[in-house]
Image (cartoon, one colour):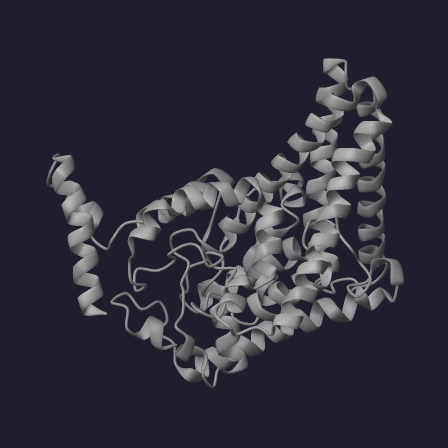
Length: 389
C-alpha cells in the first residue's frame, strides 16, 4: 500500500506480506463460520423488521390524516421519520447488498427490492456495491469518499473552491437522497465526455421517474388524503425526509471520514491480494459505539468495519462478530477506530473544515490575528501548492 508507506506514522510498517495474508485467512474463517450457521433465526429477524417498519409507517401516516392537531402532527412525524430511517438503512441498504439473497425469497432479494429513496436501486447498487465497496477510500476511484465535491486528504491539491466544502456538505446532508441520485448519475463523467450520452440520458430519465414517484407519494397523494390536514401532512413529510437525510448522512460520514481513517492512492491497489483488500477495509472504515437500539437505528452500519469486511453477511450478525474482528486488530497491532455518534460526527466535521483550508493553515493562523494576513496566507498557500503540483 504505497500511500501508507510514504506516511511518517505508517500503521502497517510492522506487518510482513505473510502477516497480511494470515490476517486475511483469519477473516475468511470468521466469514465462513457465519455462512455455515445462518438460517431461520436470521430470516425471522429480517421479516420481523420489515413487518415492524411497514406497520410503523402505516400507523404514522394514519395519525397524520388528522395532523391539523399538533400532538398528531408530532407523533406522526416522529413515527414516519423513524420508519423511513429503518427502511433505508437496516432494510433497503442491507437487502440490496444481497445479505438476505440466500433465503431465496423474491420479496426480500437484492434483485427485486426498490427502496423509499430518490435513487433507483439498480443505479445505487452499481455505485455503492460495485464501486465503493471494491475501491473503498481509494481517491479517484471511490467517489463515495467526498462525493466529488470535497477535499478528503492532505495530499490532494487545495483550491479556493474547497473553502466552501463545509457548506456543500451541509446542503448535501439536507438533500442527501437527491445528492446520492445525482452522484449515481455520474454527471461529472458525462460532462467530461467519459460517459455515453444515450446511457446517461436513459439513467437520467430513470432517476427523474423515481423522483417523480417519491414526490407524488409524499407531497401530493398523502397530503390530499388528509383533507383539511393536507398542509400539515405535507410539512410532516418534508420534516420526516429531512430527518432521514440528516441521520443517514451523519452515519455514512462516520463510517469513512473521521480522523484515524486512512485513504489510498490509485496505484496502491495494483496487484492487491485478498489479504490486502481486507486490510484496506479495516484501515479505511470506522465504527460508532452504542447500544442495541442505536445500532438498529444505524442500520448496523455502526459496525462499518465489519460491514466492509463482510458486506453480504446478515446485518444482525455484525455485533456478534465485532469482538472477533477487534481481537484481530489487537493481534496484528492495528487501531480499531470507534467512538460515540457525537465523537465521530464531530471528528468527521472537523476534518471537513480542516481540509477546506490549505495544509498547515491552521498552524499558521494561530500566529496572527490579522484577518488580512489570514486571507493572504490562504491564497499564498494556494499559489505555492499549485507550483509544487
